[in-house]
Image (cartoon, rainbow, N blue to C red; front, side):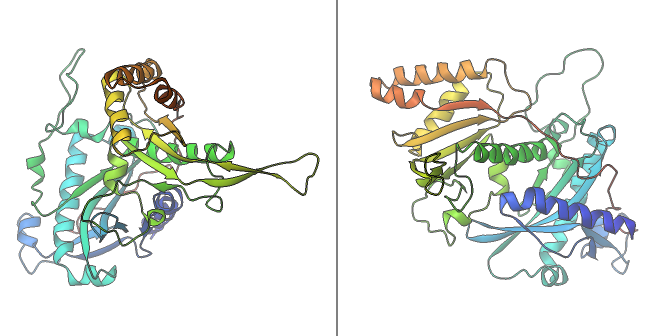
Length: 368
């Protein structure tokens, strides 16, 4: 029972600290098992009549603004110390969530429990929280298939596994929210609150909603408004994402007439949270080109780039300004256009960590 309570409490904290900010919903049912439908394939030596189950710690769902489907994330929730997170356990966790998600797709019990109907997409999510705050490398460093920097220094290179070892079917998507991404989300949430307090952006949705930005697509109509759009897991996992807001009215205190504050009209704006190191000029040229393609840099628009990376290059700001200069030369921009570029604010985001819990949380992935 205590394990169940810890998972329920952690799920509630995740809802408050991450889910609400990303506009995700977490189903109230958590920490439940459901029958395995492929026992011989999922359990070595098991018969079809064996009593085998898969765990679902929690189910997260949101409406995808492009697919017009409700995405359900069958989530395996972990809390581990940094010394306990290695390639072997990560591989085991991913294999376990893959098997569970395969069965959830075909399980009438699972779908009924979580109210799944209409147009939907069921995926797996491995959510790993590092409760001592010392895990400082991406999970993808455990996977051969992803580019990694060459091993340097004494000793053998760290062990890794191949994606093919996970046996993920072609129709299944598996996502990972790992410690570094959790820190990034929490840091962005905190930074946005700082910008609100400093009145650099709308102080609350009562002034103007700040929304996750999705470019328009031809021959596509979303069933939700821009203000309702959640941050998809693809959006938060990318190298950067954009939030924007419309023109709004703000107020400043009027010492001469306290009852009549000064009305100020403020322009629309964009906030770009950039998560790469910023070590090259070319990466910022790509970013600028993307913003120009989406028509996000203009005269009557405030643009802020917030550098939110754990390993920030010491020359990131210089590289950004060099990219602006190079980009303006490439396109032979006028002085007035150069002034618009030079008004872009570039600032660092402080990476923060928040303690959800200080103990290991992990149920057995299967019921033997």
